[in-house]
Structure formats: structure tokens, C-alpha cells
Amino acid sequence: MKIFVLTGAGISAESGLGTFRDKDGVWTRYDLSEVATPEGFARDPAKVRAFYNARRANLAEASPNAAHVALARLEAALAARGGDLWLCTQNVDDLHEKAGSRRVVHMHGELAVTRCAHCQALRPDPGPLTAEAVCEACGRDGGARPHVVWFGEMPLHMDAIEDALAEADLFVSIGTSGSVYPAAGFVTEARAMGVATCEINLEPSANAYVFGEKHYGPASEVVPAWVERVLNGL
Ligand code: BJW
Image 1 (tube, rainbow, N blue to C red):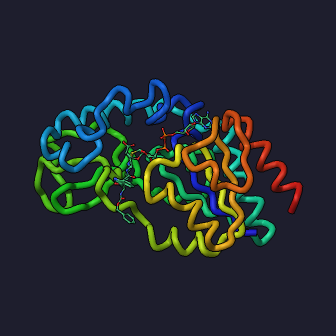
Image 2 (cartoon, rainbow, N blue to C red; image 1 turned 90 degrees about the horizontal axis):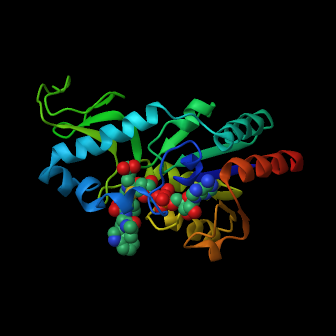
């Protein structure tokens, strides 16, 4: 069995990382055009760096919850039985890796990686972003930005994602509002290709009507129960 799992901010909510569009979400406190667009960074890089430095500090304190752990267990169990879990996350946190998932595709990038805006060189770096940092690859300063995909930028690994979707037997979406494209369109693509679809969320997402199977409740409870059912059914 080949399962494609797409995760969003909701899977990390119970680990203390804020979601974006819920009540008290990140976008209720910050203007996304100021902190999550290339134009916002060009206008006020100090404000954008401060926003992401606070997020990096928050992430350093966070631990995976039972939902992340269950998906790592599912990956190992499927592999042992000749199946495959293809885990694609919109999240820029590293909680899937911390829970033990071996292959995680970060389509919106990684918070604890720094990218040089001048030469695009990447460097693992959980510390604060500063204007003074000199890029080891091109020798220029002033270019340090988080390796995250902002609005208007192309998400990462899209070719591999499309291939994995086409090969899946089941598409499962966990903890995402279904409002940010292209990820929000994966369920429609999956359905068009005859792939079974399942939504797991606290409440119905914007495109809940497209999913064949649906389970609602906190990810830390619903995901482990769903994984148990999948493994019992193999
Ligand atoms: C729980 C829970 C619990 C809570 N248990 N569940 C007009 C129409 C269509 C598209 C566009 C348009 N205008 C512009 C666009 C394109 C734009 C877009 O989609 N905009 C929309 C807002 C309309 N997209 C882009 O610009 C993307 N690039 C692009 O399209 O390039 C061109 C292209 C063309 C063709 C092919 C491919 C590409 C880039 C998008 C970049 C998104 N970046 C961000 C910021 C990342 C960095 C950072 O973290 O700061 O990514 S925005 C933010 O939203 C973040 C997330 O990954 C993303 C999705 O959020 P998510 O995960 O859905 O979170 P929430 O908060 O929205 O929802 C949480 C959910 O969890 C809720 O449903 C809760 O119920 C649930 N939940 N607690 C279970 N305990």
C-alpha cells in the first residue's frame, strides 16, 4: 500500500506551535504581506528577521506530539511490509524528523535553515538571522533569510510531489485548512486520478466536501487511532 500524507500547521498545534488562520493564529497578529512575501523582506528585512527569529526560538522549545509519532510508526510499519509512506509537509518545523520519520518532503521549506538571498546557498542554522551574517558561499552580507516559501514563490519539490501523488493508493490530509495552493489542490488531483482520499482535522477544512473519508478531532488523538486502523487492516 502506498500512502501519500500531506500535513499542515494543525498537526503541530498541540506541540505549542501556532497555526496561521485559526482564532489567535499567526495571521491574526501579523500582516502576511509584510512578513511572508519577498516584497515584505525587500521593504523591511529587520522586521521579517525578527518575526522568524521568534518562530525559531519557539521551535527550539517544541517537541513532537502523538500524531507525529504515529506517522513515524506508520512509515516504518509500511516499509517492513513492502508498502510506502510518502510524507509531504507544508510545515517549516522539524517535528516529523524529531518523531523519527525518515523521509520528509518540506514543500514550504525549513525554518532552521538559512538561505542567502544573493546566491541562494543553504545552511542549517537554528540561531538568529542577522543582517551582519556573511554568506560562506558568496562572501556577501545582508542576504540572510529563512529557507521558507513565501507567497508568490514556487513551492519546493513539486515534480517529486506530483509523481508520488500519481503513484499513491490513498491521499491523506492532516491538519491543514485547504486554503493555500498548490497544496490545497492535491485532493482534487488525487480524486481525478482515482486515488482514495481522507481528511483528518479538528473541523472540516475549506475543501472537506472533496474528501471521501473524514475524521474530526485533535490530531494527537485522531491520527494514532487512524494509524492503528490502517495497520490492523493490512
Ligand atoms: C487542527 C488542530 C489540531 C488546528 N488537530 N487539526 C488566488 C487563488 C488561488 C491561489 C492564489 C490566489 N492568489 C494567490 C494564490 C497563490 C498563493 C495562495 O494559495 N494564496 C491563498 C492564500 C489564496 N500560493 C502561493 O503563493 C504559493 N506559491 C505558488 O502558488 O506558486 C505558483 C505555483 C503555480 C503552480 C504550481 C505551483 C506553484 C506559495 C505559498 C507559500 C505559503 N507559505 C506559508 C508561510 C511559510 C513560512 C512560515 O511558516 O512563515 O506556509 S503561508 C502558511 O500557510 C504556511 C503554511 O504552510 C500554509 C498552509 O497553512 P495550513 O497548514 O493550512 O495552516 P492553517 O492555519 O491555515 O490551518 C490549520 C488547520 O489545522 C485548520 O484547518 C485547523 O482546523 C486545523 N487544526 N488545530 C487537528 N489540534
